Amino acid sequence: MIKDIVLFEIEEWAQQKLSDCEAGHDWWHIIRVRNNAKLIHKREGGDWNVILLAVLLHDIADTKFFDEVESLMLIDQKLQEYQIDQTTIDHVIKIIQNLSFSKQWTENSFSSLELQVVQDADRLDAIGAVGIARAFSYGGHKDRDFYNPDISPQEYRSQEEYRSSNSPTINHFYEKLLLLKDKMNTKTGSSMAKERHRFMERYLEQFFNEWGSNDEE
Ligand code: ADP
Ligand code: NI
Image (cartoon, rainbow, N blue to C red):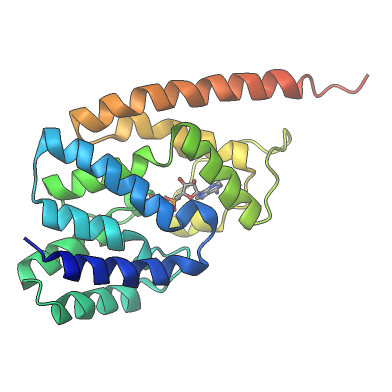
């Protein structure tokens, strides 16, 4: 067990690091992912210390906002300072390195139950009503159109291509968000994803109804 005071200090550190991130990747994202992870862990098991630390620290090394190598070194140092055992630290770091959707194009040999739980918990926060809010928040932050009927969704071939894309936020639903339901790792995650997925489908249907025809009369 990690002492409460240690957890509290790690949380404070992570919260401070995320304070400049846009609303979809702020501390509330971490709190929601922790809640999802708790539910999944209850049914699927795994080492809760590893899961919790990975949840708290996963976005500090997000390549959208930070330098990954430098951040992973900082996390390693920080956890050593608190005398977390090295096996736990190494596992947490491996999870953080392999978590992101954008890592699907990188050679990747690591997997563990704990990674699967954290990844499902993080992905659940990317879909459903909250997922929709986060997508538009990120799109706005990047100054992207929310929809442009002249630009079709794309299939990316690399992390660089995915990250440098400027496609409208509605396209992101087709490029990522609607694909997540079938990429969930655990049974629990997969069943939690279903309702959120249906909600996004209903949302898009309404969106396109309201948008109407593109033909100019
Ligand atoms: P991961 O968290 O797996 O690294 P991403 O970095 O692709 O995944 O995105 C995390 C969240 O940021 C997404 O779920 C979405 O809410 C938002 N986001 C990322 N890229 C885009 C985009 N191109 N358009 C809209 N939202 C995005
Ligand atoms: Ni996240």
